[in-house]
Length: 288
Image (cartoon, rainbow, N blue to C red; front, side, top):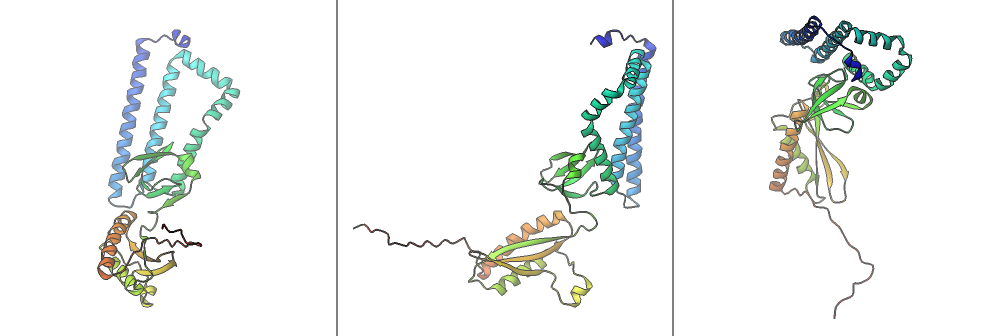
């Protein structure tokens, strides 16, 4: 701490530094409150995307505190001289700092790209790479915060999110087509199984009619059920069921699995266990 031994501050300078810190804190909180107030007022009248506002709030805070630190350094002669010396001989230093800060800058650039190109917005349900689905809580200068279904916040650097594949279930159209799949035995009545799956899906309160006018004219059913493949011990059926958003899709899928299983049991449609047939080329020895 030899550097700070030569730093002497008078009462006036100390009070000025404290005033700058207080002013920066008050100004930051005031501006963030005003931005929040403006957003809340605008969101009642317009469909306002909160992504820009959250990112703007974080950027404003960074600029204010950067200015406050610069002002404090200018008040302390030794720190000011040290800063000027660093800037004067900044050749090697800039290279070192640039190398050390490349991840920070890449995160900032990644955040700016997210705000500009909007692959997702605050409030969208997304899946990043191999991570689980979650709802975007916040987009800062450095990272994006995602709240998953376990109410855990996943903090992902913007540079990482920019290089990953993003699945967005909320952008433009929130409707979801959920696949409800079940296998029935080869001995079961396939027509009855298709009918049961269609009926159970259509009576579910979260199932919606996503057919186009053309589909309705062509008598395409609201819930399409198809036989997808022949398995080792089952015929695999799939129902295409539409609902309003991804959260409802998860709940609806669980409900339909239970309802279809009960109907199948009641009407004699078997959901088979895997079967194994063992063939012995030689007769097994018998005990005599």
